[in-house]
Image 1: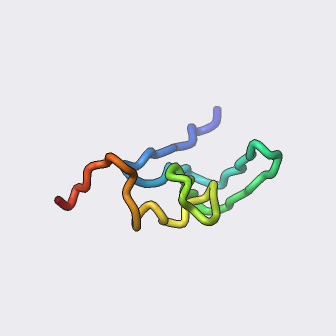
Image 2: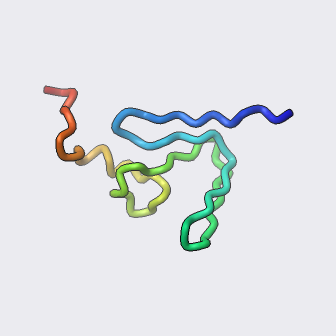
Length: 69
């Protein structure tokens, strides 16, 4: 039996998937990552979507609470 892969959903950030991973996109492209953890973008601001480039750190979604205030 395989060990289940861990996927972590982070508040205000990416989805973290234990690697290596193979990502199949709707247009048929396939991305592979051999990293021990791969960050998947959920804000859709990433220049390398579907991978996260931390663009979520510079802006907040409309209507989201700012934890600093």
